[in-house]
Image 1 (cartoon, rainbow, N blue to C red):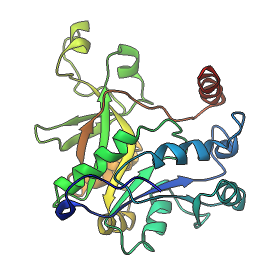
Image 2 (tube, rainbow, N blue to C red; image 1 turned 120 degrees about the vertical axis):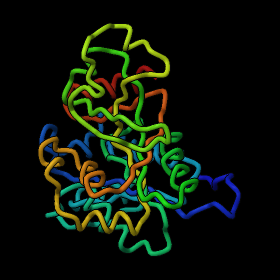
Image 3 (tube, rainbow, N blue to C red; image 1 turned 30 degrees about the vertical axis):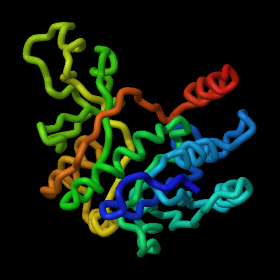
Length: 261
């Protein structure tokens, strides 16, 4: 169980981490069960999430009995969800419907074994401190040109109040005239969006029922559905990015890092 938060009781909201984990990933099938470290990948993510201070607990939302049993085997909380769920967000929402006592749901991707506990606490705290906002996320500065130009690296720009203005696979803001000094600016000009979200439970259930928006379909980014519908998303900034396990090479690098200690 995660440690109890230290925020004053009058602003504390019940929060819970839900980790969507499906068996049939496209680029690396059955990656949640890869266990060259001695533990399945989903267990590493689960244990990292448990180190966050603010959430009351952590659970896995899965579509397959093999992942269900793997989580049960290490003593984790796990829920079976509809195998036909269109996205991880839908899987998280399915579990959230049962959590009537929880105000804030944190969506941690199952392939993020090195997720920062501080980042999890940050997305929760953003919603606790801004009760009128339904969703929060995090980003980290971009300091390399290759990363900025990579469509797999999702970028975000936000206003002075930390509210997202747009998410894109393209470089944003897009410099009319390029200079490498732009990458060294402080405060940074460019930010990579990290796929960690917190939602107010009722807001999550609402957006899960919304149809994909036109811009979302173009960029293939679910969070644009929220912006296009006129809802704010708060963005926190963290210094150290975390990377998901998308390929076998990613997993091997993770294993080597673990063995190196």
